[in-house]
Length: 380
Image 1 (cartoon, rainbow, N blue to C red):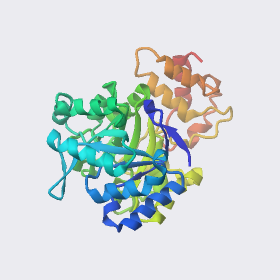
Image 2 (cartoon, rainbow, N blue to C red):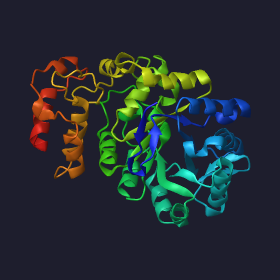
Image 3 (spheres, helix red, strand yellow):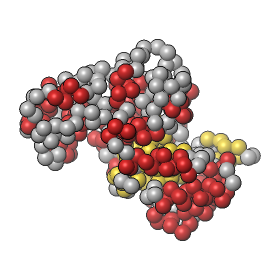
Image 4 (cartoon, helix red, strand yellow):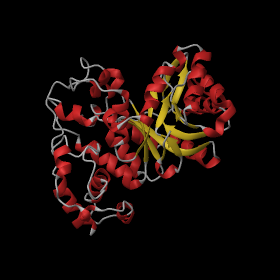
């Protein structure tokens, strides 16, 4: 299992994570076994947005003997009222629900305290101007939560969070279909309207990923499989079926993305996701499907897929493109970006302009021109 640094939290999280929302629909012993199997494969991050006691107890029991080896994303504002999940900012409900979470998970703390499910500007403002956010900071100061995060499906809210200065990481929805849709305050719209032509990756979402990289705000990924619709050519908006490995690779190639949290019903599904760790470049290839999609082409856009490899002078073209896209949005090249760029070893100035990479690019990106522009921007 490979591990990635989750932004400014500094936590090294497994790039394959565990989304816990399906735990309650199985017998307790079965779900405990799923989590323990995931741990045996090196998975060390799990999301618990669920408010029901059964899900929380399952996680707590499964990790009791190795609590310090797990990073738990626990949500503040997810409550259980009269046998139902309710998202709320009412402190009379928020406080006991969070205390219940800490108690059931065990250890006396939550690693990543998530401001739960903020998709609208109205809700963002309400959270930031109330006792709710003061409670989050209180829990952080006391050590009850070790890092502050936020979950959202809206790139505009994610941008506000990344710019806040105190939110250290995001739980954000990333998959090829969502990345072609504009921002929305209604999650349901992200699953609709794919019968109309689109102009590739939504620039607002691409800008968000670059901002998170710049601000060192790590991303854990939810809804990476588009609710399972991308597994079937009949329900996929691309008219072709993706594999779990391809979708995981897509998400992890977004700037700042550290871990993809998949939902699991069976040990086989965990193994399918973990197979990413030993997958070949061909098995990871999502770009060919995107490039051939009749309504959703990304022509001319670098998706950092790595199809351009190999380079005869060993330039990491995808990473150069990431740093170039990040730096060119700024009035001056950030020192941190320049440092990371130089650390690549072979920089864009080494490009031979042979254009062999361009012949391999599914999106017809003018890579040699971008290498020339990157060398000029970074000065090397």
